Image 1 (tube, helix red, strand yellow):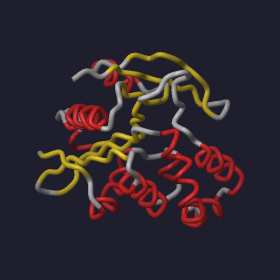
Image 2 (image 1 turned 45 degrees about the vertical axis):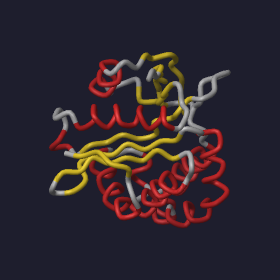
Image 3 (image 1 turned 120 degrees about the vertical axis):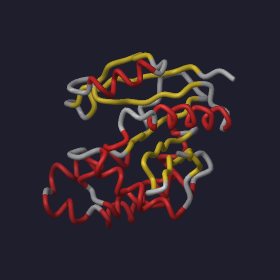
Image 4 (image 1 turned 60 degrees about the vertical axis):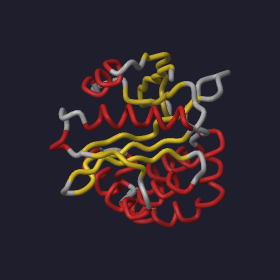
Length: 201
């Protein structure tokens, strides 16, 4: 297995892997075209951090985020908002009210940045092929993401994940040095943890 920076040819495969890694999640429900647009955004932005784990058969894991979420998400909305809405149309037609509400939240998203702190990189998404779970792929992706974050000038990494019915994922982050610094409700309903990890050279 090798871990490398993603390139444009990896975007479609990462979108497909996202669908398999996160069944039932909102972003997954928006479809492959929407996901491709999102991951292309990480690839094209100067603050984007986007890496993939590859084996002979193809991509088996990925991690994506940004070292400047307060800049990245407004830029993404400004440059690609019409493309995001267009590519979400099939999902909107199937379930208009809930999808529109969540899509509005998504386009306003700023990464749940910690208050009164700067120089933090947001890990937006990390996923692996189901067959590779427990094989160290996610751990290696996490370490490489942290190295890339430091190279971008970040002194800590933060992320959010579900607090309930998510024991395996929460245990993974804690095992790799992440501390739950707050608990909050997303959209007034979804119970979330925010984790942080201080980086050192």
